Amino acid sequence: MKQVLEFEKPAIKLREELEDLRKKQASKPSDRLAAQINELELKLENLMRDIHNNLNPWQRVQISRHINRPFMLDYVKHCCDEFIEIHGDRHIGDDAAMPAGFAIWGGRRVVVIGHQKGRDTKENLLRNFGSAHPEGYRKALRVMKLAEKFGLPVVTLIDTPGAFPGIGAEERNIAEAIAFNLREMMTLRTPVVAVVIGEGGSGGALGIGIADRVLMMENAYYSVISPEGCAAILWKHREHAPEAASALKLSAQDLSALGIIDGVVPEPIGGAHHDHATAAAALKDAVLQAIAGLENIPAQELLDQRYQKFRALGKYTEN
Image (cartoon, rainbow, N blue to C red):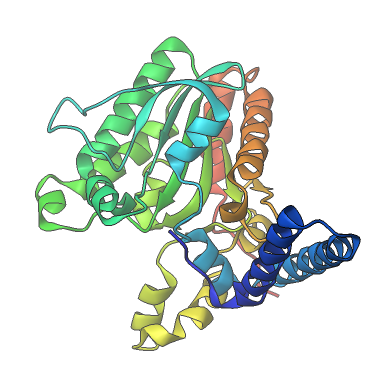
């Protein structure tokens, strides 16, 4: 499935020209074609670098939602040598929007939990477009408690527009499920590393986002509300979403500068949707480094640092 973003179109055209030249070179090699290919490759690389270095917040939001962007289970496939999924919350049932289980991450035994989206209609219906139900958050906490019991670090991969707002979710008390997770994660006696890999929308993201280290992929966003939702409230129209994205300070770069997150994970030039393997390698290393920095901290000190980390959020000084 192809999705072309407006600001990527010049690069797409160059890629098509490059592909045509490569096919010609494969069927009838020549020095002239080889020189043209080299020239076009350099031109494409420079163009992609220029686009990538000048992205605005709204463009990064668009990249974070790209249909070809690696999702949670794509990262699990690339980063984990083994993954054993755990199903069900032991109250209602299972939630396919929130896969969770035990994994071997770069040789380290961990628990991995995250939001999973779909790439077609059938998969999106199964995964509920990455919007978890109450049982998803309760399952996540059940697996976190297992991690605490066995002394395993917790890795959460956040990628959701928000928790599911449907009547059924409300009837099964989704607000309580998320709130309970916030409290319990604050007292979890094992290292927790959270990474926003795509969309980080509202309480749906925060429900698995209370962590000792909070990281973001370079083109992800993390916000209390979507740009469209903010625009609908403030400007009464979704067309102002680009302005809202800038005002919300939702990009990894802004949130890092504000001290809301602890690090930015680099993506390949143009975004993770262009190269899953390279993006996953960067994520894998970043998570391993974060765990290494936490594993020797005594449990009570870890809890104290986590508490102070979140208590400090929102403080600011006016001149």
